[in-house]
Image (cartoon, rainbow, N blue to C red; front, side, top):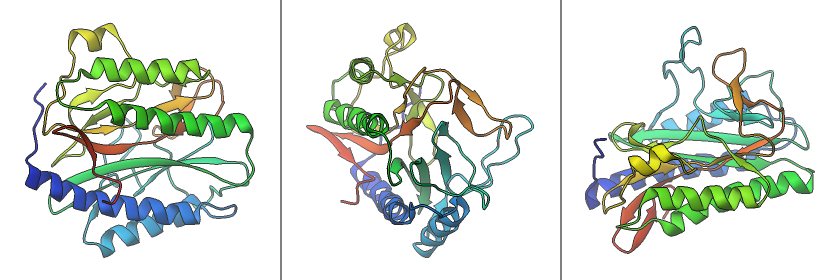
Length: 260
């Protein structure tokens, strides 16, 4: 791995990008009501992004063989869709849905990336718990991030917490380093494995990670939908997703996508 450490000045550039991400996610939170289409949310996200002089990171990203480039500015994933859902005028948000939105920007050459799951209207108590547990697992990770900590300890704590609550952590998709590029080293799993233990990530000042737990109500197993982009749970049960861009600094963690 070639982890690129960031200076304090570079972190401020990433924080500026993070403010745009937070602004967009807050606006989409307001829009996430029954009847809105994910296409309408996508258009608004791109409008706000461009109005602040930023570039939407996801649009045009190359896909898997046969999938084509990603067509949206946001990933909009409904219910059993885990990640990479494609916005569409045909996909309306309904009462009782959970909607996970992932969004990233590049501003003045520096990137920031975050995700949030919105609860729309009346949902079951178990769905609310799923969303709360996913959000809490991200907060748990951020609270543990400090110079000298090993990521394997953080990942194990995240997994233990989620599984103790009766849910499962997605294995196939993980977080990542971030900086001038959306995806940099290292890969950042939200679960413990022998591979992680063997090639652990030692946190130090200047490391910046996009930490993004994806938690399923049922099995952790996922598959690709027919569009080649959207990832769905194999058992058809709901999923939730939260993410922040987080810098390791003296004394702990600094969240760059919380609009400080």
